[in-house]
Image (cartoon, rainbow, N blue to C red):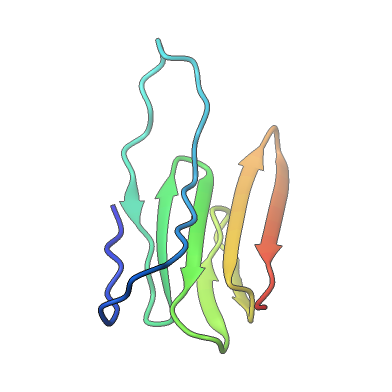
Length: 91
């Protein structure tokens, strides 16, 4: 679970990652993968990270490589031996 810490606000946008899986399979335990520059959670071979600011964030991808990016958000997963990274650019 990630906690958003910000000034009081009347309106905001939240990005909510959803994971679809077989309900009969046990899901891996979520792990905090946050760094000083991002809030991140890893579930199995999937990582979701949100940039804490407007500059660069550094996050460790599920396969061990570090990623340095200016993106607002990153979703990375390893599926069937293939690595996938999707980024949401800053506005």
